[in-house]
Length: 402
Image 1 (cartoon, rainbow, N blue to C red):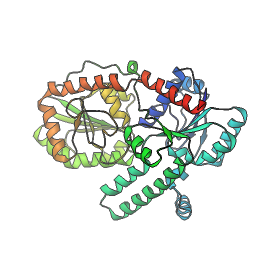
Image 2: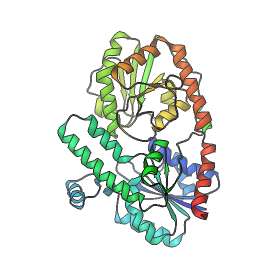
Image 3: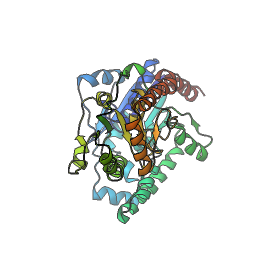
Image 4: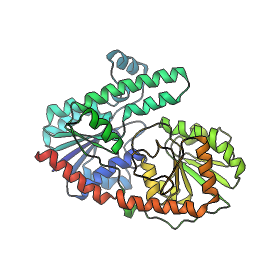
C-alpha cells in the first residue's frame, strides 16, 4: 500500500502538538511496512529545517515541500470576503503546490492521500483530477468551533465580530470539504460524534494521538513542598494559549501566590516572552524557547493548561500524562482524552476551582504525585502507539479494498 501525506507545515522537527500528531501517523504507518511519502507546505512560521534530527525522516518519507507565504494581507482578506471563502484556508493555497502535486501524481500512483487538517483542503480538486487515490481527512480539531469559542469569550466588540465571521467562513469550508472526501480520521470522539451526526454514511474511525512509550521514560520525580513549580509549555502563536494564560495570571495566580509564596510558575514556548515579558507577576519565570520540551516537563512539578477555547486533543497534555506529571486543566483542555477528574488529572473551570485545586496540590503532595502515576497508567492502557498502528492499517485496508 502506498500513502501520500499532505501537511500544512513540516511535521519535523516536532516543535508543537500538531507536528507530533502528524509525525505519529507517519511513523505508525512506516512501522507497519506501508510506503509513505510526505509532501508539505513550508511557511514563514514553519520553514523546512535540514538538520541531523530531521534527515532520517526526510529520507524515509521521500519528503518534498513548497514554500507558501501564509501571511495575511489586506488584499487576501478582501478577496476572501468578496468570494465568501475562508481566509484561514485560502492562505495555504498556492499554484506552485498544486503543480508539485500534479507532477508527483504523474510519476507515481497512491492508494490513499491523507489531508492533514482542512488547511490543505483547497488541493482537493488537484488530487481528484490527477489521482485515483482515496482521500482521507485527518481531523485535528473542529476548526470553526475554536473561533466560535474565542468569539464567545472576548468582550471586545470588534474582535467578537471578526471571530464570528472567521468561524462562519471556516464552517462553510469544513462542511463543503466533507462532501468531497472518502472518509475521515478524527483525533477524538468529540470530533467523531460531531461529524458523524452530519455525515452518517461517511467512513470514519477515531485515531487518537498515541505515545511510543519508549520515547517517554517516566522519571522518579519528587515534589519539594518548599519549592513547588507549576509550569505551562505551549506556543503563543495560538490565540487560545494567549487567552488562557492571560486569564490564569490575572484571575488565579495573582491571588494564590500571595497565600503560598513557596510556589512558582514557569512559562515556556514560542512567543511567550513577546506576549508576557512586560507583565509583572510574582514568582513567574518566562522562557521563549526550550531546547527539549520533554526535559523541561520532567524538570518541573505540576502542569497547568488553562484553556477556555480551542478544540481537539491537546497533545502536550497527553505528553504530560505519559511523563507522569500531575496536570491541572479545564474541561476544554481535557476534551477528547479519556481521563477521570481527581484520579489521573485535575479539572478546574473557574478561578475559584483553579485556586482550590492549586491549594490542594500544594498541601497534599503525595496525593498529587499519585495522580501523576495514575496518568502514566492511563497512557499505557489507552494511548499506546502499537495499538493505534494496527487500527490505521485496518482502516486503510477498508478504504482501498472496499
